[in-house]
Length: 155
Length: 380
Image (cartoon, rainbow over all chains, first blue to last red; front, side, top):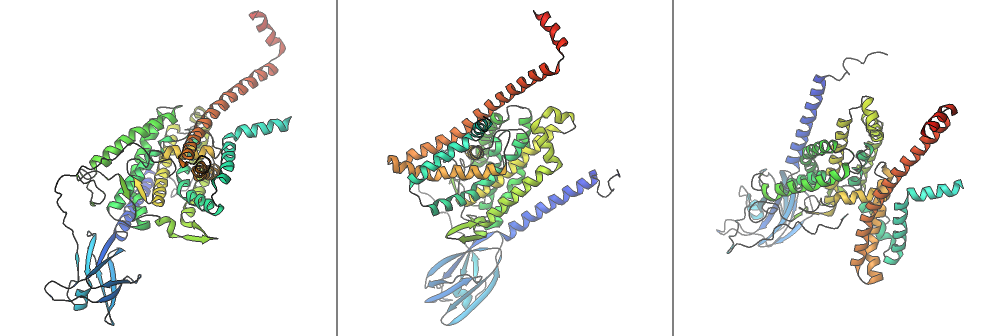
């Protein structure tokens, strides 16, 4: 019986290296998934500016990243769910085609994309959308989570 | 005579499976459901539930019985999903993220569970069961009070309006059926979630391979006799802890697969029945406290879910109330667990008696006559 080769023998050093590599792979995968899997909501807007600096279109057809086109009338807004940070918006209005690519900030959940702004060449044509919480008139008694009545087994 | 005995033995060994087969065979035509609908439902539920049931195999192999402590893994999976939804990580990456977040939690909880079970040898099942209740309290404290106050949460949509704690029901739209839809094939009008099936097949291959490894062989040896295994140099306590850790990790992955298929999560209740369901399924499939195989999992999931599908409708058809069918299915699920445990205890006692009788006969036949006679004289 011959002894195992030194390179294949399980030593504390080798074990440490393998464990270190596993932790590194775990963290790398987590980071990749975290960055490239994060979703954002794009609000596609077709409204005229309050100061009249750009005007909305009567109708337009817009698609995000080559997806299914959405129809928007004047003063309408629709949403598209996107994953990752870099995206392309393409829309057609009054017989003309407009297209632009942009990179979203990582931390923002909802982005308002103004299509008339894009057509008018106003930069930036998008901005983070943060809705102000509406203060409640009176504290609403919210039902606390029920710990009774578990769902039937097996789903 | 031998044939009669073997039939009786077959019936005794498979009584739970036979009872379920008879029940579902009787209820299926009464329910009036179409074959296509039943097949679709069964195939969906195989994808949804099998992984969870598979998590029970390794602890059985290591002689630790049915791991009711698998709810700890389910809780870890739910915590992973809460973070995936909070960070709005969508689709399959969201599921991977949930797994990555849940993994260290599952390893820690599995280690804890294994250490506790090592201190409660011979009472692993009831200890795991109570440990699940204990951890449920800790889970509620973490999710209801720490999340949003100590643990930062980004999304106001998932936190309670008071600013901390997670809502009762979590909408999993961002990851809903993302694994199932990854590779959905329609065959004869039936949707087959191939990606989910591939993962289950991979797990089956892993279990078959694992049984042949040194660790797998150690677990089987420990499952047969801990004292002999210890004497032959197998680290019994460590191997048992590893079995529980792997089981907890598989339960975590299984719960994530289960919840992504459901599309929403009862934050405080989703894990509570997971252990019961999985144990009922594997026992209905013909497994016992000491022996569980891959076919047991599939047979159990199919039979149990066939009953879940047809019983409420059969109840509605027969008694005018689906609720009665629901009572039946719950009663029979828990009844299956009780029956299997009683049968196991009975078989164990019978085995001991047979061994004892064999030993007496062996002693009687092996001992020389003159050696027996003096003892008889002495006692007389």
